[in-house]
Image 1 (cartoon, rainbow, N blue to C red):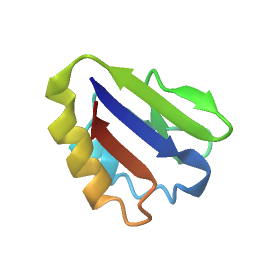
Image 2 (tube, helix red, strand yellow):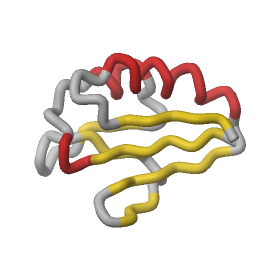
Image 3 (spheres, rainbow, N blue to C red):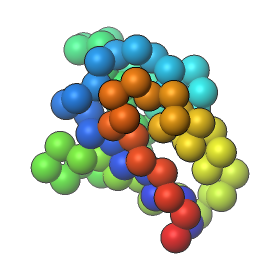
Image 4 (cartoon, rainbow, N blue to C red):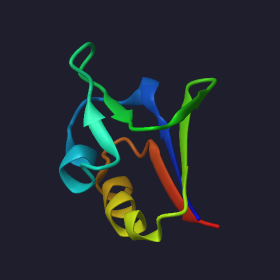
Length: 76
């Protein structure tokens, strides 16, 4: 299982995550910050738990590219 977590409030809207993992992230037209698709909000932390191991590499690359380091990805 892959677990992706996003601290959306700290997003600066650079769009790297969308470019590297477009199936998991998209930019909000409302405020210009990223949205973790299908993520569950818990006190400002959006979490996606997926059994699709194929998303790990793209999400990991997005986490590494994030200039404010608000994305975490782990396999459990």
